[in-house]
Image 1 (cartoon, rainbow, N blue to C red):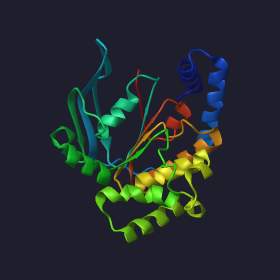
Image 2 (tube, rainbow, N blue to C red):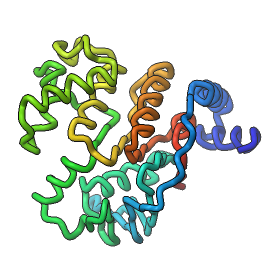
Image 3 (tube, rainbow, N blue to C red):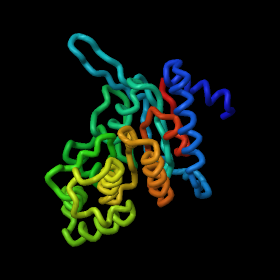
Length: 261
């Protein structure tokens, strides 16, 4: 993208506020410099996620609000995709439908060969637990559990053996740099540490697909860069990653960006 086009995108994103756009553009440049990209793997021919003419309407009082209107996308196995655009453009709704957390008003979602509309609630829950890892803007760590237990609990729905869960938690804590924090309560962790913990929890069941909704929304710029480097490492290990963000500097870490209006 040439510089003039980049500036225009940031000014539009911040409603014409040139100072805010300039600040964001500086963070974008910092993020670009911080990314150490491994040689890109050839895009897999295998499509792991498809949405076909996906529509979602919510009823608010007597009004019907359209969140999605005929969205069709294909995501290849091992891809790092960013969904970006202004608030209210349907990014998070699309992510929730792909993850089976909500059902479309019409259209179809297929994930790893499974038509989600044909799965019972029990089967879709099991499918989510074994195939998809979720990361949200808010960390959702249980305040009364120490970090080790917060991570370990993600493996319980699949009834994995406790010794296997403990081993996996120890491995993941090392990966995300939290080995020395496993006995801490969430209130004793920084925002960046809590997001790292949320990422480790999402990876506990070795999902093929990682869905992240505004994962840096509550973090400062420096911590955001560190978290996005971690996402880059996760993607490099073979995971398919779909990330929702309204920030262009965060979307820059992905291999492909889809912008909603």
